[in-house]
Amino acid sequence: MSTPLRQEHAPPLRGLKALTTAFQFVSDPIPVMRSMYIERGLISAFGKINPLSKRERLVVMAIGPEYNRQILSDPDTFRARGMVLQGPQGSAHQRIRFGLISMNGEQYLQQRKLLIPPFHKKSMEGYHNAIVNLTEQMLGTWRDGEQRNMCGEMQALALRVASMVLFGGSDAEEAYQIGQMMKEWLAMCFRRRVWFFQVNIPGTPYRRLLGHAGRLEREIRAMIDRRRREETGGGDVLSVLLRARDENGNSASEGELIGQVNVIFAAAHETNASALTWTLFLLSQHPRIMAVLLDELESTLHGDAPRIDQLHHLALLERVIKESLRLIPPVVWSTRIVDQPVKLGPYFLPKGSRVLYSQYMTHHLPELYPNPEWFDPDRWLSTEPSPYAYLPFGGGPRMCIGYAFSMTMLRITLAMILQRYRLSLVPGARIDRKYAVTLLPKYGMPMMVHKQDRQFTKEIPRGNIHEMVDLATH
Image 1 (cartoon, helix red, strand yellow):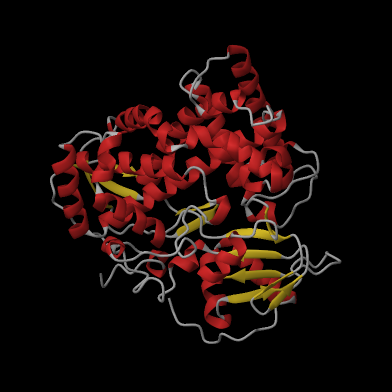
Image 2: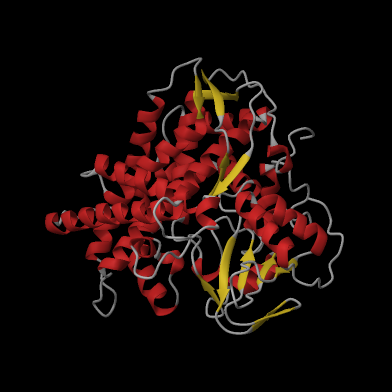
């Protein structure tokens, strides 16, 4: 990434320039963030974006570990708001978007305590067999010599794993269908026609979003009601939440349950699908790394799925995943609302201002990670970044509670895929990015599937992937 042209305090963008930049950001945030960084340095600002608004709310973009630390370590000043549109007051959309990542204060702390048990490391053993079985089912449908869209494959797998972990096996198919509805709801939330035209009248995309949210909420309520009646005592997240009580004997309310179920599912499915897709792509572009990784997998696992106790022996696999999450993090930016006046860098931010920080931009700062566009898993042999310099799962007291689950799923799934099959990018494939909650390939990830024969080849793609990853020199 280029060195900034200027580091000094620049006045906020305003008027048409601010509106145009915001529109471009919703479509593709990475080039906008990169341009702002090059032109204005580690911190920059927008003035009024909505011409219909009577108040000017400053929007600040801050990059790097020092700003990340200030923002993420002080949740009382920088309040979480989630990534999805608020929706009308009292609407189904507003309820289903209100999960842990949107909560603050005592409510957040209480709900986090209730949610920790199913995401604790000890719970991973209970999820191990489900992840292995579902991955095995997927691999059983692949055939030597065929072409597959690995993005679609990883999305389907992550959807089924999230359904199993969240809802349990008794309602697996129904849970999968609800998962498909959740996936469509997320996609609708990030469409530009919804984002910039939030008008609830017949025929608008925004009206269709609200209607879909209503149907999704009804399905989630029905699932919760049925689970309450059954009292299965299962170890899935929903069953644990229904039984959970805090130290005062309080349980999650109906509204809290609906929001938690929807948001946890969406986060688990989308982030893991993105991470798996990009890791498979990066390995296909680096045959030498892939060969050494396969040596590690075969010498430790001998073709089998890894047991929980074997995961910590797969050191290179862990470095590959960490480097993939650094280079192409599933979530590239997040936001906070200023709850009390505060100074951030050169800007004095009144209450109601919004602050955007970027995992992607921080991970691509050359002063933190030399040659940041290179895929270099061995950098982790000597690199020990601060908690605010490496944050694919967030940072501070609100760090993602699903960290252990995601790392477990990624390691198990990748180990099984790579021992069984050699994947190569289809010649001439175009790999462009799209962003809607997570970063994914716009046209899918077309790859050829071969039985693992170690005949690793590299097919360099077309597309703007080259803006994010240096595939020519390394």
